[in-house]
Length: 103
Image 1: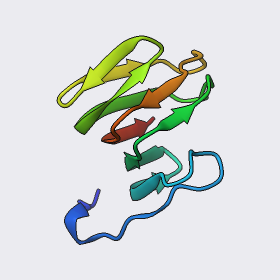
Image 2: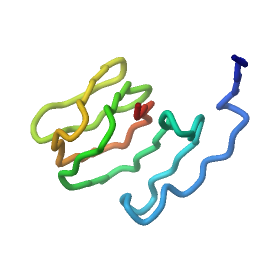
Image 3: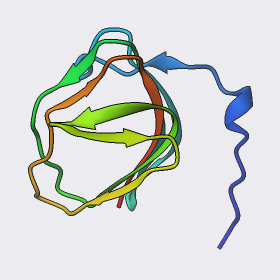
Image 4: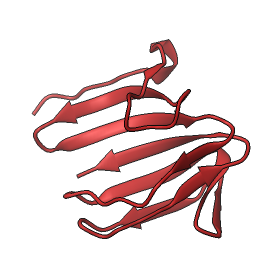
């Protein structure tokens, strides 16, 4: 088993794609058969509807805050969302950076 070390500070932010709110950026830390790990940078005014994933999803708020419905998640907050569980809608008034892990 090899060790993979990445310094995310040296990575460029990339557009997150069409499934995300305009202006959302991403740094992909891992994307393989076992899962995916990203840092998601959501902009002010971010919105995303309810959805689900086939794998467990973990969130850890690095900066800023976001909401799921009326619940507010601030810097340092961790959340585990089990596979196939509908979650959302998401929103952020002022933006955030979130470590997201699917496994």
